[in-house]
Length: 280
Image (cartoon, rainbow, N blue to C red; front, side, top):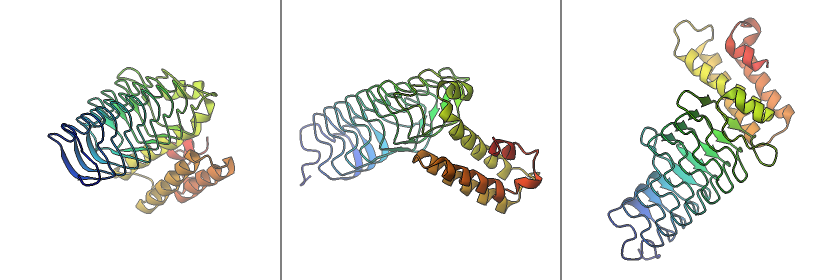
């Protein structure tokens, strides 16, 4: 390419990439056998970076370092989008997904040697946003279990390794918690274990569980909630999760929870599990 992308004997060999620019795919055998719609903004730089990757897009100087994003793929989920300088370091996001589900969003996450490597590991892990930054942070995360979205969590060397280890284990979400030096959360196997490791995780877990229950109610023919209530309530909970992940004040988060409670009409549905969780 004219801008220096894919320069070399093996860079981008056998690859199917819609757009490459930056320069991107720079370094020995980088982007070899890669499949992506776009790799842009000086991404995939380093020996074997993005080798055999399968992604929707990689941008914003992401996947930088030897073997960064090598074989990153989400076989059973949406194709990942890697952005905002994610997956930077030796083997950052190396085999991330590893025959499980990951993302699809990896944003401003996995910065550090061996960070987020194998995330999803034959289980499932949700979006990673501003998370898992530090050497070996979230290494082997999921490890055959299930982890929801991780937002502004698990930042610091060695945090959140092998969360939900074992196929029967699950963690609903990690939001604005498990950040060093206060909490490492390595090896936690359940929501209760997560909250025990770092009590500040409770709000994120409750909100994630609420969203899951709203989805169930949306598919139910006997739901006590109207379609409008579920739609507005879901939006209020999603906005509250975003507020929590950005470190907004407790008052701001509580306002969001109260808004969801009101939008769902929980005053006359006190026996609903959704409404019970929102009162915790």
